[in-house]
Length: 137
Image (cartoon, rainbow, N blue to C red; front, side):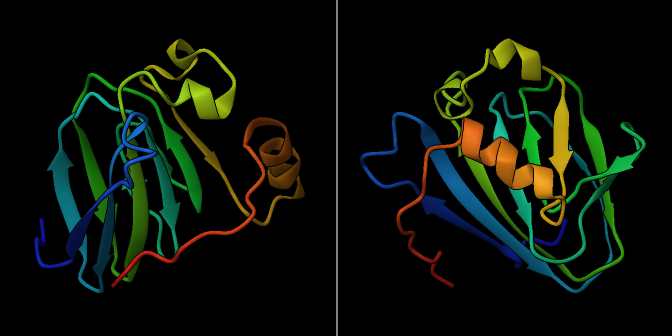
């Protein structure tokens, strides 16, 4: 894996009980790598080319929720990857999604932003966002 494109960020003190860390990855190189489970659910935002996961026979969309998984997976992209990932503490994603975390075990749920149903879903499950800070970098 191309290490130069990674940047890791510690979550703010108020979110540390819920969020372990954030990471950002940017690359214009083709990507073909094997990853291993880290034991934590994640929310993944793709700004450019989403990753393809052959084990699931699918590509992630712009917004993906990944539950805890117990299998390694390959990640492929043809380049132009730019993603932000929020890595949660093992059982805290349920506080944000209002559903049992066990439903996400070994699951990756993708939802395209251009789908109008996404905003309806987000309004029901995610707290309202008043403002946000841009990730440095």
